[in-house]
Length: 270
Ligand SMILES: [Zn+2]
Image (cartoon, rainbow, N blue to C red; front, side, top):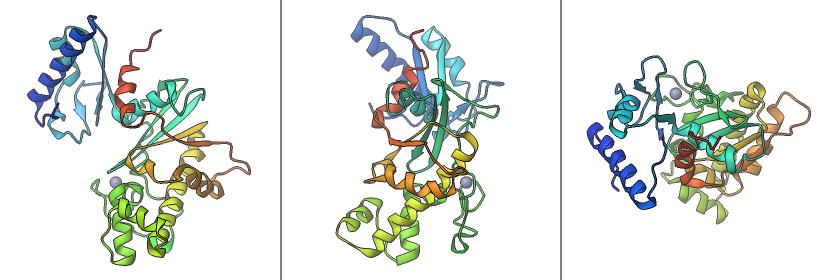
C-alpha cells in the first residue's frame, strides 16, 4: 500500500488495513500504532512528527472513534526499542536503550519491557544533545534543523556521514559507496568510517553515564554498517565513567519490522 501523505488519507489507510487484517484472520484484534512523533498526554494532540500532516491532529481520539475501540499510539523509536526488548536483541535484559541511526538519530528506553515515555515524551531522544567530548575541529559543528549546531544527529546520521566525508575529502559519496570503498582499501573512506565509529562511541558513552542500560540495540539503516556494534563498543569504552564496561552492544534482530512489531506489543498478552 502506498503511504498516503495527507491526514484523511492516513486515517482511511489505517481503517482499511485493520479491516483487511481482521477479515483475513477472522478475528477482532487490538490496535497499536507507531508514529514518527509523539502524542501529548495532556492534549491528545500529535507533535514532533516528520509526517507533518499529523501534527496538531487528535489522531488517537479520531482513530478510536473510527475503529470503535481503544487505540494505543507510541513514538516509532520507542516501538523499535519495545520490540527488541520483548523478543529481539534486547530480550532477557532489564534495561534497553534502542538507537535509531537513519536519516535522523533517535532512541527509546525500556525498563522491564515497559517504555519509559518521560515527562516531556522525549525519553531516549539523544539526537539533539551536542556531540560529547568534541575535538577542536568538531566545533561548533554542522547546523541542525532544530536550530542548534553540532547535535549528535548532525554527526552520526546517514546524511551526516556523507557530509563529513565530503567536507574532509571533497568527494561526494553515498554511505553505501563509502563502505564499498573501505572494502577496496580506500584510505579516505576508511578514515571517514573511523571518525563515525569514534563519534558514535562518544555519543553512546554519554548515554551510559546517565542511564547505564544493560544493552544498547542499534537500529536504522546505518546499523547495517559492517562490524558497527563491535566498533561502537570499543569506541565508547574510554569515555564511560567506570573501569569495567559490561554494557552489551548489539545489532537489532527484527530489522525494518521492529517498529510495527513494537506497536503490536503496546498490547501485551498480560
Ligand atoms: Zn538538533
